Image (cartoon, rainbow, N blue to C red):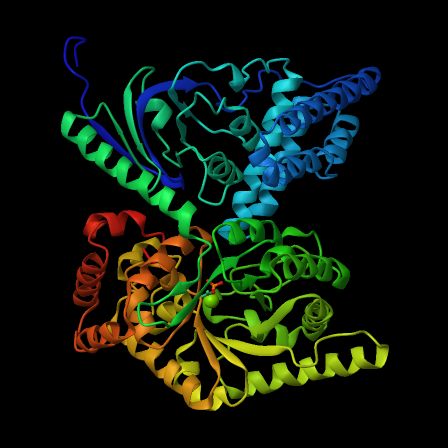
Length: 599
Ligand code: PEP
Ligand code: MG
């Protein structure tokens, strides 16, 4: 291409990290990995000086992070824990002590030793299959990079100095970098690295600046001053767009702004259908720190607390007291609204550092969740005790995952009763009437739903796994991702069967898979008889809004038509039409834009 030609329009697709649409000029910042220029051996008499140099870099790093934390705008304060966690990483023995030891024993310079310590930590993380946990490695990497910059004395690239309404393009930004972005000027950012659950993404959401991460090639392809359209809802970035793109995105931008102001006005109102049916719209969370955001989005409670992460985060098996403290806080913050604590879904694809488990050929069909708990009863009992202890401090419900039949429920309940008897003896208070339920996410549990309903207080349909096991599609395998069909008629039939069994036995039934947060599914799920939905907190206001536009009777009529359809494509098309009639102001494209759910 010659200089006189207009640059060619290009499209990059990444991971939407923070919603919103922006159109502006690119500003590239160099946040590429710090290159270690020197790796050298040191003499015995240089060791102490080298250790001191390393410790000094740690001190500088800590005071920088503290400064950034203290300068955080008021509305970001809820998220200061992220910077606290980075400060804790500085002092983690696997980073700090291990590096000092390498300097002393291997007689190598600090940069080299630190890099080696990071590589060791990385190896440990690589053993964990869980995406969320692996993405926490980014935090360790961010801290390591900052220490390396301080060791090299090259930390003058403060982002708070950036001038002008620009869109930052960087290889990666740490949460601290993101906090430093001068929020009155920077429109948003895009990065090559990063994932949906990275702390950088959480920071961008708190700052309410649109962001797309994981673009891989952005810094290679985009040049300083290029005009960019960044769609933080879909993850698309267009550079050198044509006029049509700009007009189309300006319209989208307007729609998004309207949606945001609508959320601010209505998210705390209850969701009631046109004919007066109350719908409980709750949040799925994975760690304690998410409870505040769930409340901000107007959650009617925590419908699913996935408790794996405390186990995966800690070095060994967390103590009963640690678990209790965590559950207590969640229960207290969300009270009087309920929190459903699901006992851990470990084993299979999620491994604990302190536990030796066999590598399995088919982990999704392996020793996971309740099967693992019924085998490792000591670990299971300790979690049950922690949940029971928290049960007097809020509105706590207990749920068992991956139940495949009645015997497992009987076995799990027998252990629960054993634990209750022990606690009673020890004089430890707990809620004797604690509501106990199960996830319905294995096809055999659907077939046995009537018998299972006699054993428990509630069901929660886990469509993520139910789809995986029913359609025989590995939910984590990209090769078959296109065949993972939430709208498959078989899934709707199974949900209907589960609801009918629950209603027959007079127990509650909710749904907590990704389908719950898909705007296309709301009407059909309500018509199927589900009035408790639990989802990613960000979509709660939208789902509440949709629920308010639905008349149960119309939805039931529509469901009858849906149930005659034979393929997932037909069902999806039909539901998209239904929803765009209910929300004409959004139209089909708008609904798909705002969908944070099942796709
Ligand atoms: C599910 O399977 O639908 C579910 C909610 O559980 P998880 O995604 O944690 O497996
Ligand atoms: Mg599941």
